[in-house]
Amino acid sequence: VVVTTDGRSQRAAWARDLLVAPWARGQGVGSKLIATAVDATGLLLLGGLNPEVRRLYRRLGYRNHGSIPFYVMPLRRDALVALLRIPRALRPLAAAALRVAGARLPARRREPSVSVSSLERFDERFDRWWSTVEGSFQTVVRRTSQIMNWRYRGHPTHRYRMFAAWKGDELRGVAVTRLGTSRGLPAGFLVELLAHPRDGETLDDLVAVARADLSEAVPRPAFLRCN
Image (cartoon, rainbow, N blue to C red; front, side):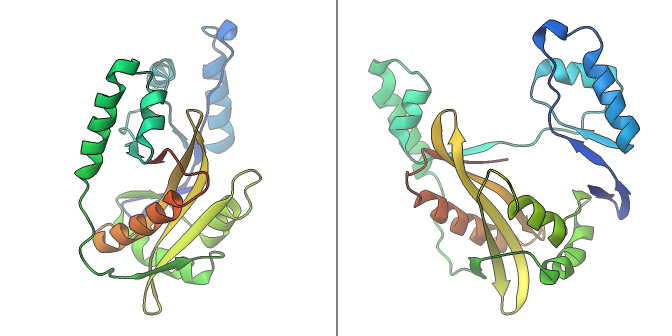
């Protein structure tokens, strides 16, 4: 990838997984894997949920730049309550709590500020738009139509749906979704949401369309999730 920070761009690699067999841990295997990746790529970005992995990264001198938020919206409360393994006697109370949480979501009471439609592929219009918004982010991984098509149109196992927000002929943002399974339940994923960081209305409209599209899938997802 190319990472842009305060207007400066540099090539980097994004390490998504570090997997070491339990019986081989504590023998320097993880450190050697990371060192090899650094030698091959130069700047290496790391992410990890496992506390043991985070400790290893700190020992190797990596700095923690924060966490990626994780959001979940319940759609089928009974399925979620069963997933949480709540005692049967308490399940009605848990379902009621989820109902109350969902009721607090604000309704969309305004007319959409943009027109959101399905997108077959990313092209030069996306590249022109991204060149105008990239500098608005303090730190961001560069997107190009080539990378987006490779990732979302050519994926070997996942089927993605892509949406574009337009104001007339002007591209204002994009969203990418997919259906899948999470914790053994059907789930909907909002995997990409791009707009100018100050264009909150476009972001709201993209989320609303993505949410409606995922919610109507068969089988109906038990919940929606995004990072």
